[in-house]
Image (cartoon, rainbow, N blue to C red; front, side, top):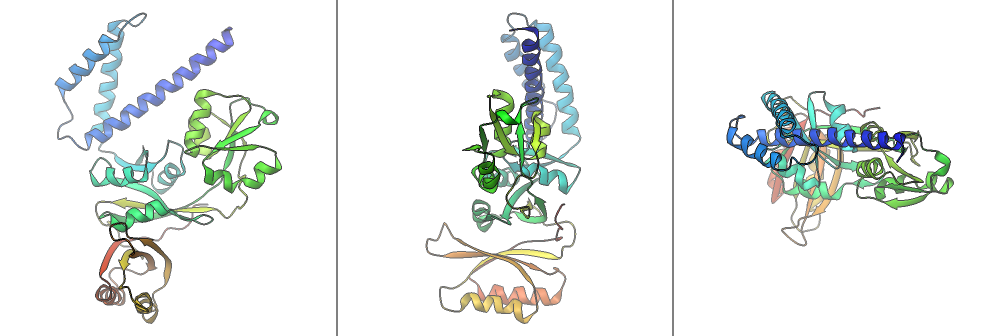
Length: 354
């Protein structure tokens, strides 16, 4: 390798080191939610012994000790701040992280492999809250999330609508004319079908948009681009060749903020889940309650109840306040008409982020 190539490898290694330290801090914060005291001297000494056992070659034990003590000091400082941890599905740079950042400045996005892990993390108190997508304006309902909402005891305390503006990302200094293949989540590839066809680019599926960006930055394959968010370009040091390459510019995803507790502020929107008796007109009777009370429905979705094959649950959103007597009377009527009924939460309706 020449000097330039060596320096490029050093830069890549430095970026990986920073990301790994950041990942460690995320685990530290999650562990801090589960333990009663921050200081655990025995645990620290055990980890240091393990690290010193790996100190070979150019790495001096004194350097390992100094580095580890600095990391521990920062870890304790972070735990003492009692930060709000909010889980999202995917790698850093996913649209869920963008939703968290757009919702509030004081939230720390924590990546989770699966949607179920977000709910489990909140339930088990590793996370304070979770941000999950419930529907997309083009693709419709996110079925996995809706299925979990049918069974969960967690509460919805907020929502946000995020515009999905897909971007074409390449390695720094890459020439757009050399691109032959593009990796991304199958849904993102489908949303950019016309752009890919027009530019004669071969689409290849990847498990996650941000994961594709991370893979490109680490593996650095030639003639390759990814479709991901602008924040993914920022996090992984990629160049944005072209923004907003989706076939439909009216592409939005609605995210829900979930918590163990109800919303601390009064809301003008409610989500609930219920089932009906298996007979003609049962669903109409429920919907008629909303109509006769002039309550505006904003969404209704049906999902099979996994614990009861052949039965269906209905997820429904409407505009109304918890302290409105008309709303309370309507909900009481519905409760009497349904064998299964649960209010998922009252929360403030959110405008779309532009």
